[in-house]
Amino acid sequence: MTRLLPLLTLLAALAFAASPLTTQGFNGFTADQFPIPQVDPPVQPAGYAFAIWGVIYLWLILGAGFGLWKRARDPDWQRMRPPLLASLAIGAAWIPVANAAPVAATAMIWAMLAGAVAALVRSGPRDPWWQRAPVALYAGWLTAAASVALGLVAAGHGLLSAEAAALAALALALACALAVILRGPRAPAYGTAVAWALGGVVVSNLAPLNLPVLTLAGAGLLLTGVLTLRRS
Image (cartoon, rainbow, N blue to C red; front, side, top):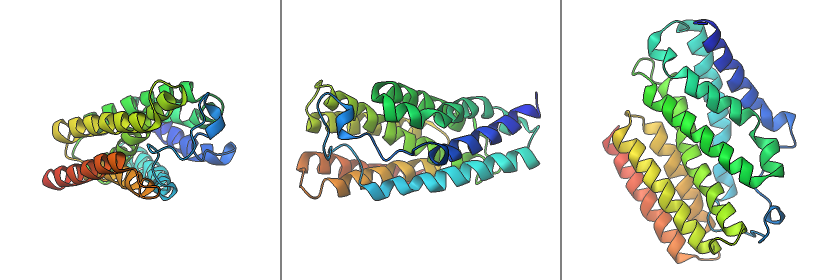
């Protein structure tokens, strides 16, 4: 089992990275997936921001591969593998669900976030660029993505207006991010991923101008960046 766990983690990372290639891919929830169509929702980052997934996939694979090769029995690595494995396994099945059922996909991405944050908290200081950093980048982006999904579902089902849902989702993402940054291990990649997502929200709300969402996302970007630098 000691050897099996790192192997399963690597296989899950590979399956997770392959999921966009083995399915029809995912370019965000479409407007017609909701009872109230979400056209250009203010909560969603600009399209370029999603390019971070390429870095996340590659880094998770490299980290898991290094862990299997060099740290298969290292207790510093073993503690973080079970929640990471669970998160990646859910992630490997996420795209087909997201293309069919946004509410179920939102529940799944929150489960992915829980596993990623648990893995980050359990990660040790050894081999930071192979062990902690890829998980931190993954968890940081999921912090934003899970909140964005919740905002889209809330607006798409008429629970809140699109602007109110965006503001609530951003506030939730910031609360989660600040808790991890201030109380979790030192992991600059986590705050960097959150800041990257918030920057994407800023850009998406420049035209047409949505000042309330732009202001909150910009303030969150600044606060996240400052705290991440201070804890680096």
